[in-house]
Image (tube, rainbow, N blue to C red; front, side):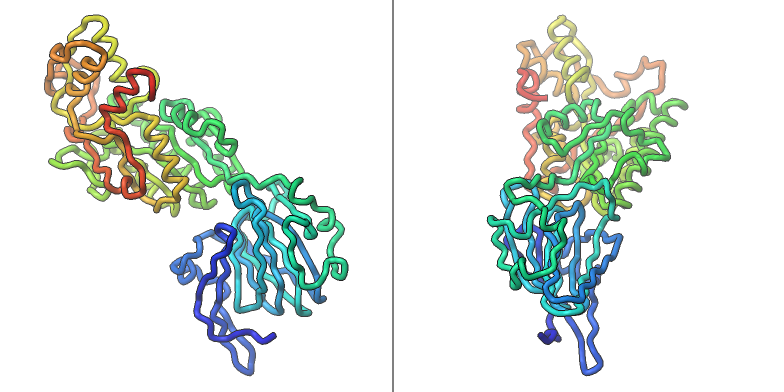
Length: 473
């Protein structure tokens, strides 16, 4: 069968999600032929995932009818034919609604196929001296999870051009299980670092029951360790969510606090970013309104220049810059975070119940953000594969001052909001005897970008009402 010359680079989708056949331009004459078997810039622009190959393998078969498979591996593959021709069969062996879906086609040097992780791969040679080449985005490991299906499985019912009883098949391949006995390939894992903090606890609730999500406290994964790269088999992870941070904004203004803030928010994040970049892992990082100076008269957008006022904000801005270099990343900027445990809302609720009439800052403007909504937003970005980048994620609704929030807490708990006295930031901290971090006066963040992905945060007042009645947070 002659190779078809002069094709345009193009794709054909299949019933198996992510499994895509590619037509490759092959240039030839009486001397032979040439093709670009893998061209990252052209192919990713045309829609191929930028899957980051690290190894190139070649399988040579001298006899017609050599049959191999069905093997599902924990990595993506770019499969093509260097010489000869094959009949290929692919079966989806991943967990999910398409488990067991089958696709077959022939490949020659002018056609290639992208095989996503967990899709079973098999082929049968149709010409002698066939060489089958494939790029993979992980190094082979005996410790990696594999899944197999019998070539003769009745439910897959693959119409092999040459019957299996007439071809060369290894004893190992003949012994693979039928579909009913196959253990599906589980999704790549998600690791939550800092899983015992208020956001970490919200993420535990959001991903409750998801077997592929792991939670690690600081003692389990030390971001400050120079051995972080060896702490896990990182290629097994689709994403790492960094919920660990130094957040003591006032203490960061002290000598020891400054060191600790930079160690956690910059040095540790840098090591995690290096791991993510090296292994194709999506890094999710939570940032802060403190990267801005709060002088704008409108809500801050993601592309506004950062201008942090204090040490904490400086470390968060530096961490954002590092994470932005990771090819697959989400930076979530948020503000005024409320979760379980001690926080501003619980303090105001307690003061109201004890008959205390507090003075509260009235010249800082923003919106409350509840930890469970941040967790929901993180899951949304990951599950929808939203474009990499920075996203603002706070409560929705009209911005308000801390004094306004306190009045709302009093009102929702049945107390007189007039008991709150609004004071300026300078007045509030006038008697402080320890360093006080400068605060941005405007912490309102524009939500249009994340809303364009389909995510909607609740109005902060509605979320506050649910939080106080025990329905959220």
